[in-house]
Image (cartoon, rainbow, N blue to C red; front, side, top):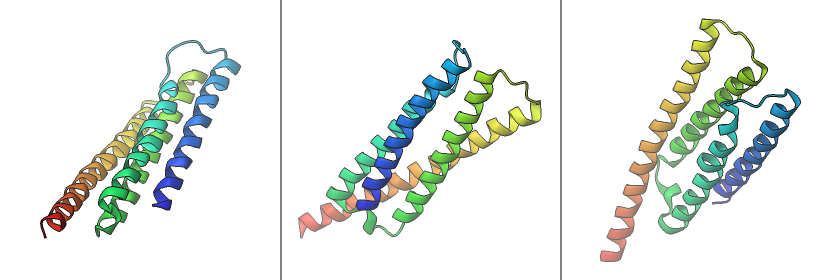
Length: 144
């Protein structure tokens, strides 16, 4: 449980950092338009900090970590999440700086972001399989 709580704290701090980074980076560069960078802060807070606080509550109730696949979920989700955030931040910085990038680099950024989302989707499926398994275990223990 401590690992999940610490990770939630990490994502809270990362989200707050990116909120401040967005504000200062756009101000320094005189940027007033729309940018993907504005979405990094709330994405990190919701998909990182808040999600893992919910996982922490579910761990307390259903002992999710007792499932043999919990570590697979934990690692997979974090890889997908970090990859998605990094690509959002890169895309946003490119927009703020008004950099001209090649179609190949643009496609690579989109592809890596898509890969991050696919990895997270796999992790979500794994998470719900784990959750349903642990709910069944809890229900079976109540019956006995």
